[in-house]
Length: 182
Image (cartoon, rainbow, N blue to C red):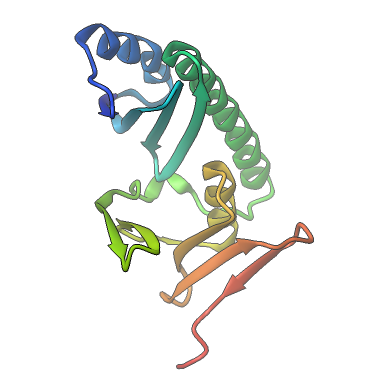
């Protein structure tokens, strides 16, 4: 697995890179060379935040933890990602058994294309992320959204080839936004 470690407001030492590599190497047995891991270490005041994202087999596994020490935050991130992988594996096995799920192994992982911050009139800070959007079913989009821990997910519908948004409603159900103009 290819591992990238970046620092925000902190300089990453070789020892830290080795520690990140050693901790994230436990996922090599699951993904091999087919995965990319991106870790970001941020410092804000006394708090240190570690964000780990692993892209493998068309799925994104992400965790972000804030703690007093970066080692503690990294350990918690690794544990959370392991739980996400186990949860995903159980869901996939159940859906494959029911023959209601498309094989996610045929989809390449979404690759971040560009990230930038723009400030508009001093009022808003807008974070922009661009991804290559891959075709997937509604069930796959919900699974991906839940694995990322987000409240919405933008995807291309595999049947209609249209861009859709799936989101979690306050009542616990899911909603889907589609283009009304055809």
